[in-house]
Image (cartoon, rainbow, N blue to C red; front, side, top):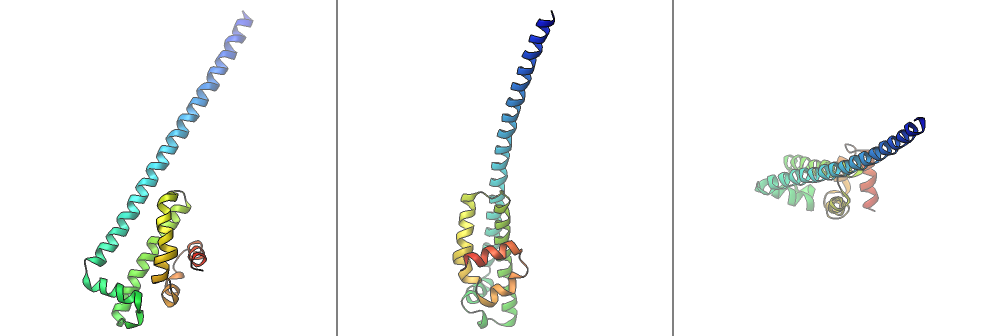
Length: 154
């Protein structure tokens, strides 16, 4: 009788261990799906923010002109236009910083990040990351992001 109880106890332990393993596999799968959903939602939010900013500039010929002229020759802008250009550029850098932060925390996936990275280290960096423009904004950005931008601008 005691031998039978020991056998049943061993069987129950094996079944319990298998149940734990199945539970862990299930939880890991759910975490992976949740991470993918979070990454997709984050990317969608980043795209919507970017599109809103771009459409606001595109829909306003004065802002579009300020953006175009400011990127080419900021000194050609009036004092008021320089301030407006400053705010446009600040918003662009903050958006890029948000993408960097999201990627660093694993919320923005590598493939989505690559388009932001190429923009930051290429086109955006050459347009608004030069000289006084960058210096006017770098102190308001996180030190890690500043290090990243300055590293890819070299």
